[in-house]
Image 1: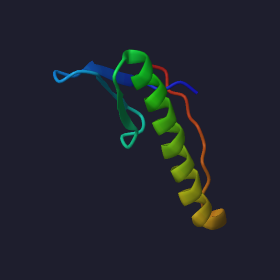
Image 2: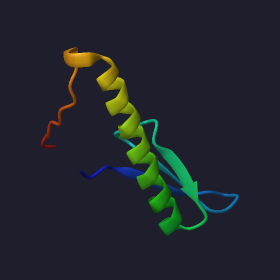
Image 3: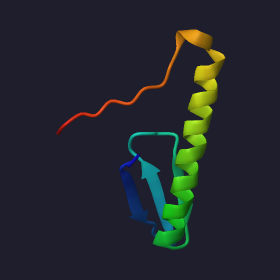
Image 4: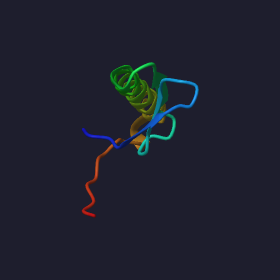
Length: 70
């Protein structure tokens, strides 16, 4: 699955990264490459938490995907 990332160069050095689809997925790194690796890990962790939360709801909840054309 692809996610939209905002990658910003920080004034104090390094880069910050934020996933637009998952507001809780935020990370940083000294280089662009490191920031992208770190945001990927953050996205995976946020998705894991969402799945665990859905499991806690029992059979009344499920996770699905939808695609919207722009």
